[in-house]
Picture 1 (cartoon, rainbow, N blue to C red):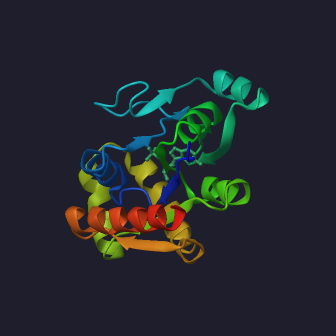
Picture 2 (tube, rainbow, N blue to C red; picture 1 turned 90 degrees about the vertical axis):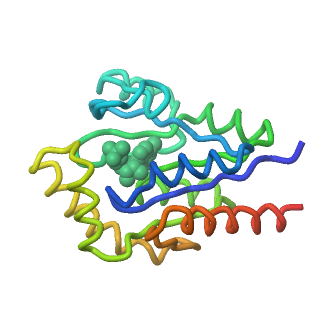
Length: 189
Ligand code: 5GP
């Protein structure tokens, strides 16, 4: 069976990656999402094993020691990681898999699986990004400030991605991402 494609999506906090990915999965039913592990507290409405597998620091560190993560990174004081078995299962089953990971994680995946598709999502402007971060309303002022600083730093990594997609209008951005995936599928066949 043909191996699935890995699609890595990164971008600054608040840019709308979750909304884009949700829509992407609705429009292309052959895509699956890799649910990551994290030590971050759930936000209101987030469901275990759907948004993230929520772990204690101890559980996360045990999993790191066992080699359970394909990649992992610290983001704003919390640990995040991609489960190796979830990725392998999807790809060997011929499913195309979407990872939503930060720039450090993408760097690790680039080293391991250079054939993956790397997409960086940006906001139309820095002001718009700040507006979206505040609008989400899920973070404290302190958390917001440090996420903003990280976002600023992350933007400098955009150039390392094959594809940069501006999320001005969700439907347009999703369409652009679907076209990128489609082109990669055509190259593979
Ligand atoms: P959030 O707390 O807003 O859900 O995620 C914070 C950051 O962690 C985002 O940039 C998100 O893409 C990233 N992230 C989520 N899951 C993973 C993962 O498994 N690995 C890595 N390296 N980053 C992740």
